[in-house]
Amino acid sequence: MAIWLAPASVTMIYLLLWGTTRVAAWLTAWEAGYRGYRLPKPVVLRGLYYHAAHYLPVGLAAFATTAGYRWAMAHSFLSYRSASVYLVALCIEVLLGAGYLFKVYWTGMRNMMYANR
Figure: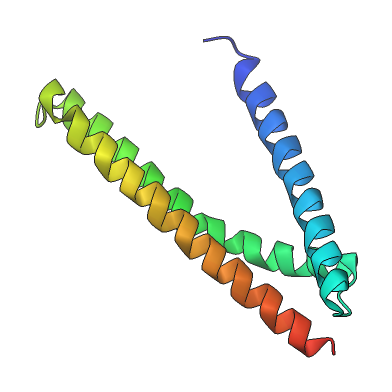
């Protein structure tokens, strides 16, 4: 693996998350204005920065699943026939994590809308 791949990946992921956060803030502020709520973009960004802390448990769960599977494969506790079970488990984690993040985001934005009336 090239030595530059890790810093380049981190930089690209950071820029992608930064851009996605800006787009989400713009869309949320636009939707709030469309519905008649006073919710400026800086307030939305503050809420999104708070929301970013909720990515940690989702990321740790995915990391634990993938690292645990790799460890079990390396130590011959699992065979390649268990790959489909691993993939289904990972897909379920993705769906649950997305649902959790959406609920936290929705709750935070709803509370901020009612707080800024």
